[in-house]
Image (cartoon, rainbow, N blue to C red; front, side, top):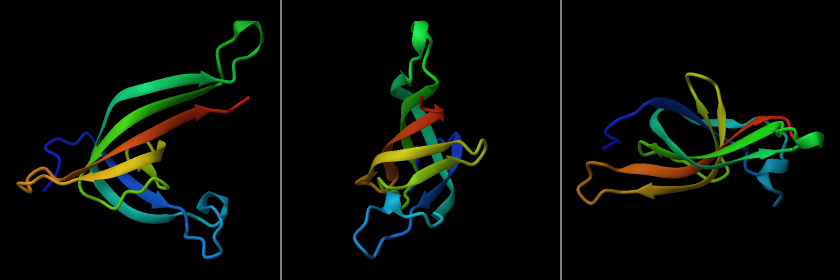
Length: 121
């Protein structure tokens, strides 16, 4: 079945497969939409960092936050990017694992995702 409570709907996009053995992130072709409307929850951040600190103790210009994502069963891979359908915010998937429930009631996918805002300096 599915997760009992969802606070978000996500779209899953995937870089094209590379037939020449290159890293899929190096391919400049558009990403393929794998699934839309997947029910999900972003849970409390696992950590974060402020990157690109400037001179004189300025705060960083880039923020990176690690979230845990719980989603209904879907084909989610570590090379994918998920988008919050309400805000359009992208999240890079760091890892993903299907979590089947022996009773079949709470099958779901758990993943670590990274939200990055701002520009690196």
